[in-house]
Image (cartoon, rainbow, N blue to C red; front, side, top):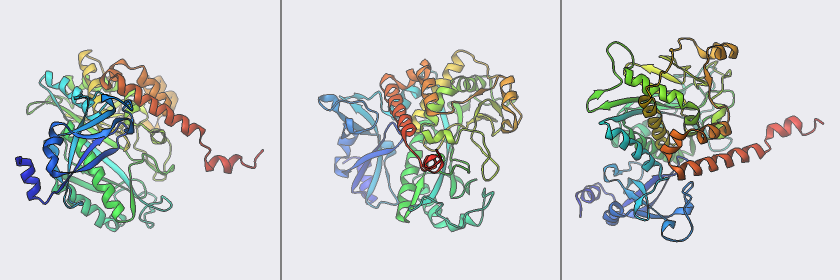
Length: 436
């Protein structure tokens, strides 16, 4: 029996939840006995490949089987599920790393950094809604302030859920930094400390598992839908990004917010922003968040323009000392794919020594479109189809994703956009049903 198996057994674990993440950013997996831990680490837990979204695997032959091979360093007992420990799996097919496994895609980009002696740290900030199971309204019916950010009346009413979630995360090594009520009814944010990019993505998926389970236990819905309410702000999942060599932050500069290397990396992110948007905002609902319009609270925090600025939350990139905040990703983004594409874009900026252009100090949401155009500031894709077109045309980002995943992602998202376009909504029936 291995030391890991001994530790988990001593913690009362009898089963492993072997978990992987599909192309849509959804946690998948199965339960296996702790006794087969060595097999999980050596070979992986097996799954029918074609049953997993976005694999493109056949129904027959040796490539029909998808194996999630456990990463021993991720094994942790689940506080809300006694006797069960999660272990994160990397995708393998026919004994080789599977090119369309999102975690493997990120590993490939991290290897490119490692070859240069670099590593990336990210701090991912998830926003989410707590909703009623019936009717999809806010879980707290009294949560209806015109400007609900930092509301200290609604926040305590969800204290039991938020505290249990915080304790579950802390028990598994998370360093929590803050919990607050966000700018929409029923919306909250839990921030935890930044980490190495792979660990940060793993933790984001752990957070989602915990929050879903604890909300369901209360008869509530934990939702990372980007924009559940048309007249209120949506949920972002902002990335704080910094590049390191050992203990040295390569984005730090005593004379400026970002070093020359940091500015070139950021310039790559801006240059590839349209293609990155497909991965950072991967649903049709995402593009109801990425538009500049008036919300109930009078504020929107989702960027629409390709620009950067010092502590400018209206820009796509908000620069800060030694790091930048990428503000496009929403709560539905796959953290592995978004991070992998971000690295590819940043490295392209460094390799080509791209210039990010002048910083923007204005509130971009207040500028007329004519002024935006006059300044040469680009507009992000405004639909999922537009974002897919940008992704298909971006050789740097598609190469980072790999041929299989790029094709599967675009196909899935084109199908999603078509299904949405063909759907007849209640709004259409009410508006047109008896008009003509």
